[in-house]
Image (cartoon, rainbow, N blue to C red; front, side, top):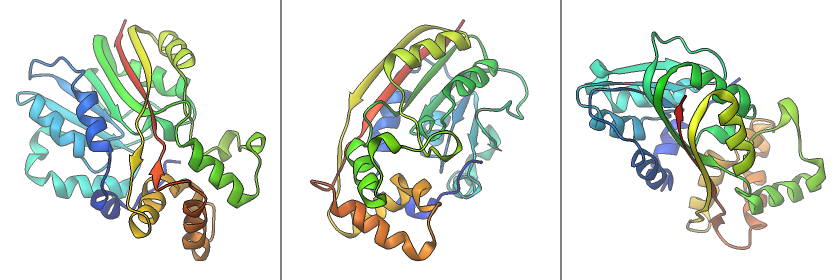
Amino acid sequence: MPREWDAKTYDSLPLPHQQWGKRTLGRLNLKGGETVLDAGCGTGRDTAALLDLVPDGRVIGVDGSSRMLDQLRTKLADRLDRLEIVQADLTKPLPISGQVDAITSVATFHWITDHAALFANLAGHLRPGGQFVAECGGQGNVALINAAVGEVLGRKSEDEPEGKDKVWYFGGVEETTQRLRDAGFTDIDVNLLPDPARLEPGEQLWSYLATVVLGSHLDKLPESDHEDFVRAVAARLPEPVVDYVRLNITARRA
């Protein structure tokens, strides 16, 4: 079940996602009349940019969080004539008609642990020759934060949760390339890019960790423990930095 997000706080934070979005959308080759699917559209930051890129086309924004989509509707209220908004699970067939010309995604796929199902599902909604560009957390992403979480929970690295208890998945280059190939993609280019984000210590770091990074961990704890957990994780970081490593994907539907 996709988790809910604090959409308003999310939008108020200094998100490196803005740069990730520009970098990812920059890999699209669009003429302006295409239909593009924004997979994990969130509050619509990249959705708005996509609408600008296809002035004669349309965008389908898909996300699992109703709060994120509510924020998107408010933010893009004057552009809904070319925007279809869908709440759905990206690993399951989407309730949209026809195939799209391109699919893009920013900072979403690491929250989905079954990448084989994810890529196969998206491939089914993309026309042959259609573009697929995405980025998400990759192998090594937030390793220092993950270690701090383990310390707070008294958990060793080999005790990382699996299956339904796993909160994120950070794919590597080789496994991602193979899964894309198995799903029916070609012209595949996958790479990892270290991209740390520095924050102000104290309130900004705590809010960022709670809203953007540790939400799935907090979902498993009583609300009364949330603040202590976030501050305990932050206290174990060597500096107020989120040690991001981004997995960049470019491919086409065969």
